[in-house]
Length: 199
Image (cartoon, rainbow, N blue to C red; front, top):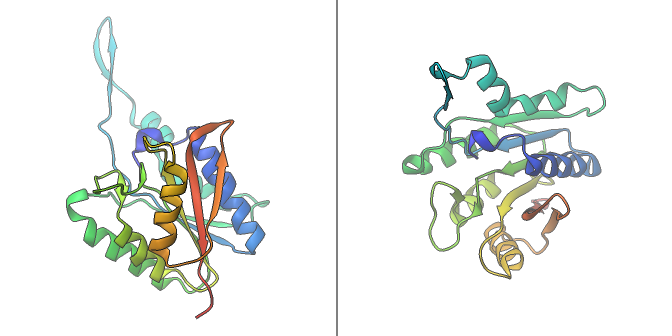
């Protein structure tokens, strides 16, 4: 996820569905794997020359960890954790191994969100995708009765929704995948959710 896209309409859908799923399933912990790619801070052009955006302004609007405050709300009764270590496409294997280890270290069931910019790889993975093999590895780190959720951006094909849902289902080796959308807010995204069964 690029930090400049934090807090848009898609985040309303994303966190709305994650909180709904956690409450429905009686799960208290949500973990977002952000695949964070930090953008350079832009400068402001003024009549008196270029001006840097103040650090406190940048960190307020670009801090993906702010969503962890959802867990501090007395109503939510949730724990939200954002894995915001920078994602480097050239070192993605180490990133996935580290994430898998972190998930295995947590003993409780949880909702885990894979949050790359575009979702599951089409033919080949760029920095904006998660590979099918990576979905499979992270799936194996999810505790029984926990959930794995994937952010998926629309592809150029008409049947993108069915295609990507099936790719996610196969990567998780499961029969059932739930789909969440809010086309009236953002019709170009979907979230797929799969539940790990008991061992």
